[in-house]
Structure formats: C-alpha cells, structure tokens
Length: 384
Image 1: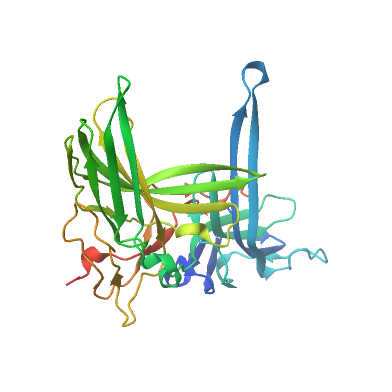
Image 2: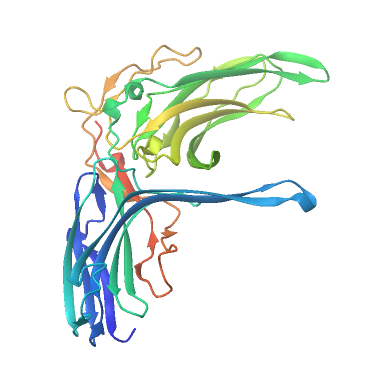
C-alpha cells in the first residue's frame, strides 16, 4: 500500500479496557505518502455477539451436517472524521493530501452491555475499525478490539456470602455383592468470588466399604453454553485444580483444605447476552481404587467483578456455616483486610483472531485479541 505508510488506532492514555457507561476515546492515525482519492475517512464502532457450530446427524449415506449460528448487535455506528458523510453521493470526491493525520474520536458506551468474551465457537466482541472509503477500489482498513466490562457486584448477589454445600454417596458392587456406603460431604467457604481470590473447599469422607479411596481432587469448571435455532451446545474448561486426601476402607476423615485460585475470567451469567451463558462450579471428586466410578460432588459458585465488602468497607470472608463431620476447627465468619487495588489481567491461552467477514486480506491493525478482566492480586497485598 504505497500511498499509506501507516494506518493505526490508538486509545487515549493507552486505555483498552472500559467499563459500561464510559466514553471510549482515541485517535485514528494515518501517514499518507501520496494523495488518496476518497469519499471520506471513517471510524466504525461495533459491538456484537456471534456464534456458530456444526453437528453431524444420522449415519452412513444418510449422515448430514447441520450448521447453527446466532448473532446479536449491541451497537454499530460509524463516525466520519474527514470528507463526505457516509451515503453522500453529491459532487466530486475529495483527495486526502499527503501528510500525517491524527483524527480524534469518542464513543459513549451504554450501561447494559455484556462483558467481552472469546470462546472459540462464540464470542462477545467490541472493536473499532478505521476506514479510508475509496470509490471503485478496495478500502484501506485498520482494526483494533478492546475490552468492555459489565461490573458484576457480588455485594448485590444474595448467595455470594452463603457457602455452597453438597454431598453425594454410592454403594460399590463387586461380584453381585454390595459393600458399605461411601459418602462425600463438601462445601466452599462462600458462594461468590472475584479473579485473584481463591475458592477454599473442605469436606469429609465416610468410607464404609472395603475399597480404598486413593485421593480426592477439586477443580473449578467454567461451562459456556451457546444457544442458536432452539438448540444449545456447551464447552467446559478447567480453570484451576488441587489434590486432597483419601482414606482407607472402613475409615473416615477429612479431605484437607483444597485451594483453588481463580484466574482472569469473565463474570457469571454474561449478563445482557441472550445467546451465550457462563456458569462456574467447584467439582470435588473421590477417586475410588479399582474398576469403580469415582464419586463426584458439584458446588455452584459465582464469579464477579467487584468483591464482597463488609459494612465498614473491608473485604469479607464469609462463614463456613455448620461444622462438617470429621472436619475439626472449621472456621466461622472473619473480617479480612481491604482488598488490593484491582488491575486488569488477560485470559490465558493466547489471543483469538478478530478477523471476520467484514474484513479483507488488506485489513491492518491488531488482529489478535485476548479480553482482560478485573483481577485482585492478593499475593502482592498484605492480608494480616
């Protein structure tokens, strides 16, 4: 593109994460080495959700592949920063002379927008595209995504202070003979967390069988469900894991304290998006020796953006509630210090390509993107 040395988007103060209701501002920068005939220079602000997946149905010659997709738009507006307004066909088209240009832009975000999310077969994405609109030729375009955060306040979630409790049991069968009952009781320290905090899981095992429980394990599972054309499909991701204690046959005991750190992750629910939903659970598993299915317990939790606070402004560690049999010294409510100042952390696993059907092979810009979420780094903050 000999006439265009560079064409980029920059954000004021290098800010690329915005909360709902804020103003997105920056500059579209063009370094033009030779005059370009153009209708205008434009900045497009686009926020939308999109998903698509395929399924195979039938067998043999009757097998067919069905495709499912859905999309919803949150905003799509174009601002002209130079030249003729979009759709203006009157008169001659002007020429953008050679030179270095900085075109400032601003866009006011609404207050009910879902958080940015990249999930492979589906995403909630927000981007800015710079366009040099040229008559009868391909347009020069540049593109850059940014993060929008829906600030999910755990203090407004009634269940966030309440521990998540559950139990499960099973009887092993061996050579048509039933053994004694195995029971697993577990609970979390509370029901709501923010990235940077840890889910604390405790519990007890009652093993009335003759079979050894080799260990227990716990993990945080993120379930993303996508909806289209009356159907749905889900994808599961493990965010963190830990290993706890087991017990021999005909004994009982506690599983220890299993600590599950929460990495950068989108908030539960993905509010204001009707085609993607996100839920989280802490799964606890008792690993049973031999050819037996493990015993599992699921503890639903919420992940938010604003941590729990006491009436005095400090972060709150909620009560564990009633004691669990076999788990001594299970703590009650305790006030924690003020939380660390929040930062923004990108999700792990690398960025996603933000190219879509509106882009050409000539589109420039930052075309790989990983959303960032609120993160509270307790490791760098005194807690005593």
